[in-house]
Length: 260
Image (cartoon, rainbow, N blue to C red; front, side, top):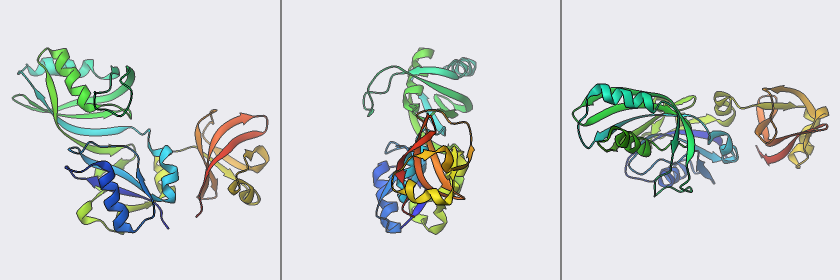
């Protein structure tokens, strides 16, 4: 049984779940899941969790993303106007998810950390963007086109990074091997999750669903906030995922327990 994350470079032409199934079959895993959907034509980095690591997907779903892509302008515009538009769409923006999205079409705020114009060839604009999870890049392109008054659509897109993970360290489906796998604990360390380290004598109770209380704790990394997810560790090994409660001497309730 695995407790690993596979770093995969998804090809164009298949869905994210089809990509996950290929990885699952290759490693002969019993379960598999991913941390964020890519449209069929979009390529790039996916984090695929295998077996026990599937339980940790909530830690991986809200991570910042980076992409490179091509936006096609419906009418040509001056480069400076394009640069001004990119500046306008950097920072907090408001998006309405596209019609074919899986979520309700309600206005929501997202943050564009950086939006860089790499190259402009006629009506095709190569760009690089770093953004908050849940940002629709296809909608970003169309909104920029509307702002410019010329119209635009996303022509191609590639996810190049997910928080601390780069597509440069990922493997294509044709080159899959054991080197594509990283231990779950190593992945969570790179993401920087908050951790509660518990005493050895408390493990049995926690694995049976008991909450984590003050007298169970050796140490805590990070400042805990009510309602957030936290990793419960014995030394270097994650044993459970908890939800922070902070009520009297009750620190966290046990949510998901790892079997290995």
